[in-house]
Image (cartoon, rainbow, N blue to C red; front, side):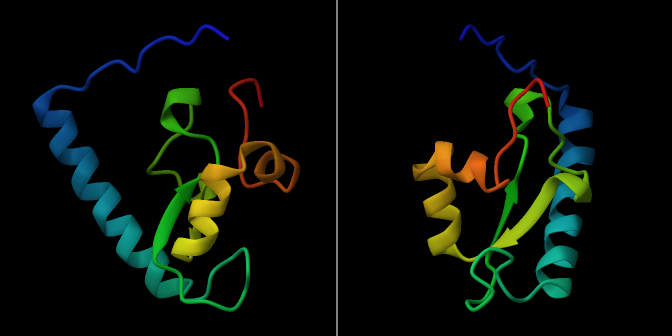
Length: 93
C-alpha cells in the first residue's frame, strides 16, 4: 500500500495541537483509570484507533481509548487481531 507522508504542521499549530492533546490525555486517563481492553490494569497510554497517518485525529476523543502498557503493546504488535477486535481502523473506514 502506498501511503502519503503526513504533512508537517506550522510551529503555531503544533503548539496549539500539543496543548490540546496533553489536556485531553490527562482528562481521559483520569476519567478512565482502568484499561478499556483488559478491564483490570491501570490505564497509562492513550491509543488512537485510527492513526493520524491513516486520517484519524489524535485530539478527537471518539478516536481514542485508554489502555495499560501491556495492552497498548499488544495492539501495536498484533495489528491484524487488533483490527478484528476493533482497536485499529484502516484509512478507508
